[in-house]
Length: 151
Image 1 (cartoon, helix red, strand yellow):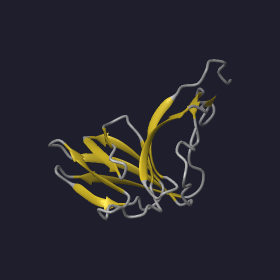
Image 2 (cartoon, helix red, strand yellow):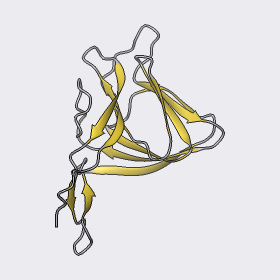
Image 3 (spheres, one colour):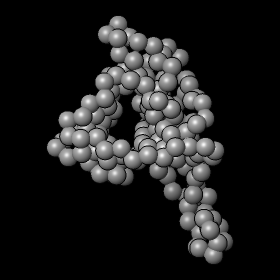
Image 4 (tube, helix red, strand yellow):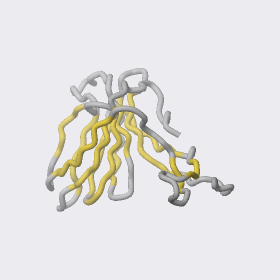
């Protein structure tokens, strides 16, 4: 039986490309949760289907000190830290650090190199522990030019 209580709100970081080809990060909110059973007769729970269609799921372990030089996300992808901490720095200069329980959606395809030759984003581990990340890559094309298109 669906709940009459308002659904939860969950924030995530969206790494996206603006109309000028600059990567940016925006804090967004998932707020279209529906209360239903994921598999009856299991009790209802809050769900927000974000990805329908083909996807690749992988777990990556970034060792301490790892830095991924400036690059674009290979595909639109959800990145969920399982342990450790990591950072993402976008072309606009914003740097965000994340740990377990935080979520990022990387969708910075189509950036244009700036005067320093930077394109996409810089990412790496924070601290002296590996960053273990679950990555869910979408096989759908990116949506460029606007942040927060997942609700």
